[in-house]
Length: 170
Ligand code: FEO
Image (cartoon, rainbow, N blue to C red; front, top):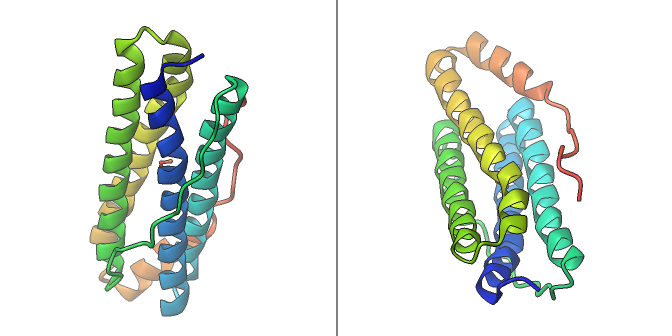
C-alpha cells in the first residue's frame, strides 16, 4: 500500500504525461503544416516518449496494487504562431513537468516512501535532459534559424531523430 496522497499525485501524473503527448502532437502537427518536417519528426517522437512516461506511472501504480483512474485529457492551449514561440512553450512546459515530478518526490519523501523515491529518480534525471534538449533547440534556432540555409540544416538535424524506448523498465 502506498500513501493516498502519493497515489493521487502519481495518478494525476499519468494525465499530465498524456497531456504532454497531446501538446507535442499539436506541435508536430503545426510544423507539418508549415513544411518543417524535421521539427515535426522531433516532436512526434517527443509525443511517443511522453506516452511512454504516462505508461510508466500507470504500470508503477498497478505493480503496487493501486487503482488507476484515467481522467480527461485537456485540449492543448498553446497559440502556435511561429517556430520560436513553439520552442519556448516546449521549454516552459518541461519546467512545469519538472515541478510536478518534484512535488511527487517531496510527498514521497514526507512519508518515507523510498520505493516511490527510487522510481522517481529516473524521472528527475529525465527532466534534466528534457529541459536541456528544449534549451538547446531554442539556442540553435536563435543562432541559425533566421537564415534559410541554417534553418534547412537544423530541420534536417531534427529529422534524423529516431525513437528509443525508455531505459527504465518496471
Ligand atoms: Fe514526460 Fe517531457 O516530461
